[in-house]
Amino acid sequence: LVTTVIMIRTSPSYIYKNTSFHSYDNCKSLYKNNNSGWIMIVLLLLLIIFFIIGMSLKTLFMPNVIQEKFLSWESFIYLLFIYTTIFLGFGLIYFLLIQNGIPILKEDGSYIEDSFFSLLQTCFYFSGITLFSVGYGDISPVGIGQILAVIEAMLGYTIQASFVVRTVIDFRRERG
View (cartoon, rainbow, N blue to C red):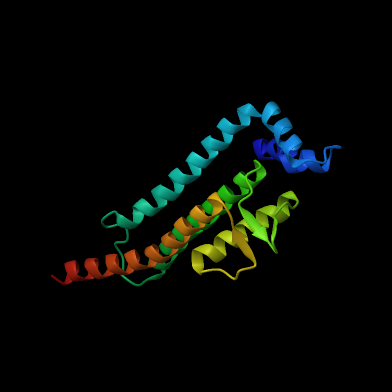
């Protein structure tokens, strides 16, 4: 949390809004000169988030993860935790990238630069809409955000299919 607050206070949007610079390029150069160490911290956070998402997806393919009934509350909760991990993970990835000056989301034709909580809410909203559907079109990804959105959407569709296939395979194995 402290790292995030410091990054927010030193992000290009904060510097741009609270200094006399009128050029985003001047603001970006000031940001790069003062925060070269933050890049490593952000990369470490991104690696941790991807690791957690990967480990969550790995449990879907491990044998005998769900040993109770095939369609039960345990299965539902299990699937809910996997979706929640991916939803929160990608939301934090979008948030970290935007906070570090990488524009990846547009709303109504302009890049999103909101307050801390508003931006966090927007990133989680975009992540949820991308994971669970194709999206509403009110927020659109640009640049590397498009690649991340495609990866998240593919995960959203393949988790359902792999869960059903896994259940059928386990059911056939149990019936002999």
